[in-house]
Amino acid sequence: MNIVVGITGASGYRLAHEVVRGLGEHEVNVHLITTKPAETIAAIEGENPERTRELAYRHYREDELEACISSSTCPMDGMVIVPCSLKSLSAITHGYCNNLIIRCAENMLRMKKPLVVMPRETPLSAQALDNMAQLVRDGAIMLPPIIEYYTRPHTIEDLNHFFVGKVLDTFAIKHNYPKWRGIR
Ligand SMILES: Cc1cc2nc3c(=O)[nH]c(=O)nc-3n(C[C@H](O)[C@H](O)[C@H](O)COP(=O)(O)O)c2cc1C
Image (cartoon, rainbow, N blue to C red; front, side, top):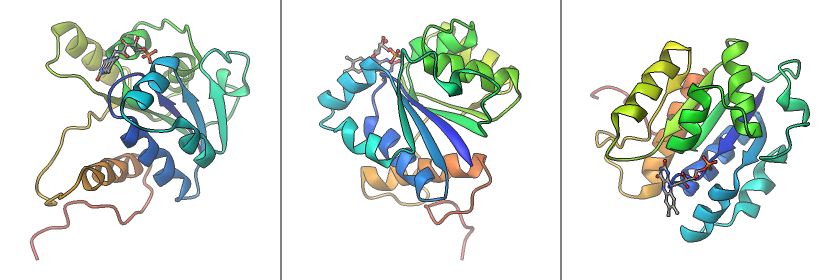
């Protein structure tokens, strides 16, 4: 499987790192695109983007619009944007393809392939909610990293792993990340 992962400048770089790792550990070639604001946030949050790039099958700059994955003729199986800033959410919703992440997202919508969007902001404006609703109508899967308590997470890593599992679920990839398994 070939999946594009876009990391944008919303809070939660560590979650993006874990998604890249989780996909890679499940036989997925991760085509990674990182925006400049995402790298700024990574530094603010004490993370090292180089470590994430090392886990990817390939890494692209956000301005690499001539890359193969920029075209819908390049056979990708889907895309995850984690975390997705409200700016990028708006750009995808309105088809403003000014970087490789937005262009790839547009390709997923055009080709009816899975597009998983993980917006992170709170509280949310009506504009952001409208954009999310429109994207869901256009076929995207809206997967905001809203925490759960029923798996009894102890650490942020536990929570991150829950979301990695949710991402793998959207691609029907079997995994052992935390999830609800019924009352035993
Ligand atoms: C410390 C910090 C945290 C931020 N967190 C968020 C966030 O959680 N969600 C969001 O939508 N924007 C957030 N932003 C603003 C985005 O980084 C900004 O809108 C940026 O232009 C997004 O660009 P991109 O989507 O191309 O990466 C944050 C900015 C900073 C400096």
